[in-house]
Structure formats: structure tokens, C-alpha cells
Image (cartoon, rainbow, N blue to C red):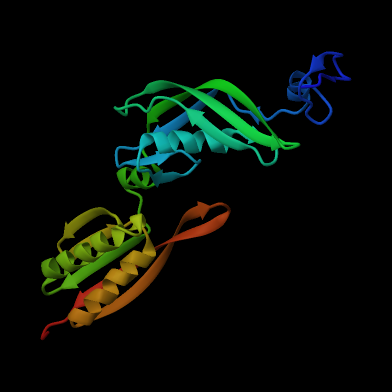
Length: 233
């Protein structure tokens, strides 16, 4: 193989990358930039914050790889990989990871690697945090006859919806002299539960709204939904 000359450092080299030896090219073009430390948070419910949002992963290893990818800056066309030993127990851990970027330039593969640490830490996810704090956006007020029976229906419907919409959680249930109040995480699932009850029972409904604050500069309201069961169903 003919030796080539690097115009930058003056060394002889077997390969040139964009006219430079591999060392000079690596110093000029940064294939990989990534923080020395990355934090991956996980919740007791099973969600993991690997790609800067909470979601379910098949394994903690998949979440760590996502975290490496989303935190890495690379040259165009480079592929990121992560090499580590997947932890078997999800406890506050410090995991050594080798992040590598591979790219094909001028028909040749070049790589850049960096050893980093990924820290696992337990934290309540957005949904669980709201649930534990008692956050709600809707109140279903069940009044009249058979309110316990209607309560079971409403709770059952919300549990079914929770599989696809985790804002369908019940924050709390209050039994009062006049009936039962169900506090629901979001308005839409609460409305759907009421519509289900209307198909089965003879009920009348009424809605009212109350300003509860602001979110991202926009007003946020809470909705109270009266569900009154009539006699003769």
C-alpha cells in the first residue's frame, strides 16, 4: 500500500480522510459529543424517562440506549451505539457506558468513542405525580337512586380507558350526604364515563366550569358534571 502525506501534521499515513490523516481528521471533525454523565429516571409504575419523556420500555437497557442517543451530538449520517452491561435490579445505580459514533466518509468507516456514566434514579412520573398530589380536572357528582351501582359503572369505565389514556385515573372518591363525588384526572374520560351511564340508566346531566389557574399561559378550568339518577329505570 502506498504511503500518503498528511498536509496538516506532515506524517505519512496509509489512509486519508478528506485529505487528512485519521488523527488530524478526528481533531477537525467531531464525530461524537456527549455529556460525561446522563441521568435516567424511572417510576414505580414501570415508566422510564429515557428520551426526555416518560414511557414504557421493554427493558431498562433499551431506555439507557435511548438516553445515549438523545443526549449525543454527532456529525451528519453518524450512527450511535452504546455498550454496557444491563443492570438486573433497578436501584440507584451508576452504569459505565461506552458511546460510539460510526460514520462512512469518503467510502471509509471512521469511529469515535467516549466512556460516560449513566445514573438510574427513582422518581414519580408525570401521571403518578399528579395522581399522588390529588390533581384532577373533573368532578362527577352522582346523585339520586342507585348511586353506588352507578359509581361502580363509572369506575369500571375509567379503568378500561386507563389502559390507553392514563389521565383516566380516579384521584379520590368522596361519599357525601347528598351523594358521591368522583374526582377524575381529565375531563374527556369523565365525559365518556357519563355517556356510558346515560345509555344504561335514566339520568339527567348538567355541567358547570370553574377556573383553576393557568398552564403555559392559558387558563385551565375544572369541570363539574352532575349525574342525577331518576327513579323508574
